[in-house]
Length: 208
Image 1 (cartoon, rainbow, N blue to C red):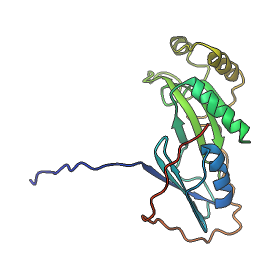
Image 2: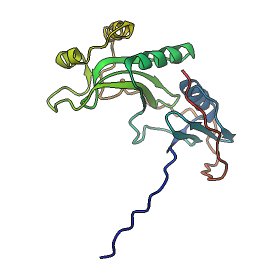
Image 3: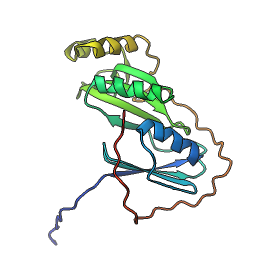
Image 4: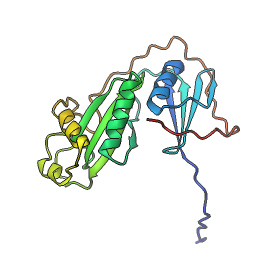
């Protein structure tokens, strides 16, 4: 048997390409969600080069009539304070948010807030407070983990705001707010989808 050669490679960043019905509407949403301008805009196409966390995000205008295999998108943050800061930034930018605080998601205790893009794709900002919960715990919802909550208590005003948000929770589905149906309202989705590998984009950073 030929011995496998493991040649080290340098990975730069993850790449995510989303099909969208209206690239202009989606571009406006992700400008607000990420706090940055696209580095490339063409007919039916937009590219965001995110520095923190490293991500090459592209939007391709293609008819979308029903949800695909994508569950949701997310940005993992370092603390509940960061989640609340991102939450307020999204509100200030005019985005509608949905909160899940002290929730059991994917067998982990988390604080999170959500926004939805024009095609119904869900984007969360979240922090993991306690991971590797037992399989016997309820996944995923709020108010089920009193014992885990007590072991993940946070100090300061962020804790009070987190608790207040938890009192008004409405999202209950597994690791995402209640699903929304995708609306196929594209006026024209005949733009060609290109995936070039030429121009290097200018690094940018998500701003809050």
